[in-house]
Length: 282
Image 1 (cartoon, rainbow, N blue to C red):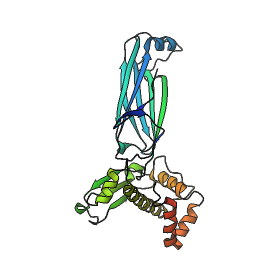
Image 2: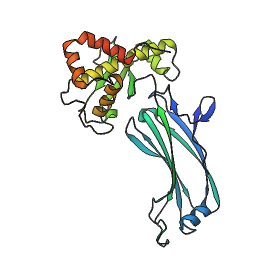
Image 3: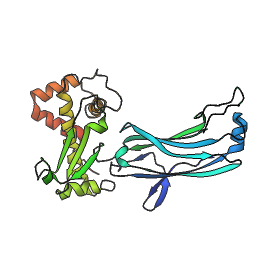
């Protein structure tokens, strides 16, 4: 018997929601889940020996970062009913997009003398389920760092800088990095408050998002191989940019967008402002 995942918050805990609208990459997640396993029943129904060791495993996958990993693994060797609780902490910098939480009961080791129809290989799944959490926030959805621009080659008075590196086939998480100048109080504070932004923070985050979108769109258009027919790997920069174009310009072809950018850059800038809905804050 399993209970749903629960999200730990400042005031205690809440059932895992479908989405976190104010999430950003600085927000780590603390999750818990209680699971009760009738080990004797499992062994009996699957046909494995009473002495077979089992493993209860939780694995997380983030579609936005294309990262995944084991959240926690608990070995079960006793008989009767076992009650366990997962207690998982995930770094916000590793997440993004859709967070998948897979829980599975598996064979902990190979069973040499199982019945012909029974599972026998280590890792054989005896039971599993999945819960999802959509991570969506006002802050741009890629890694960021707050630094002192005075110690870099960037202008001391600049508020932020979006760094793009690598090819369109490179992993998005390694290709994008938003740098925020810690000396620019308004911007640094807005990102600190991104989980619960004030009206002024929402305006700053909207400006950063609009500028980041502009830089990403112009970066994509500068690559002639970037078209609607391009086939980029999942989790790649090219795939992320295609998704951005689908979101901002759902009814326009990339060829038309590229032509408009070249022929009327000022008008294109206004088009982009409208597409990102700059300063439309609630």
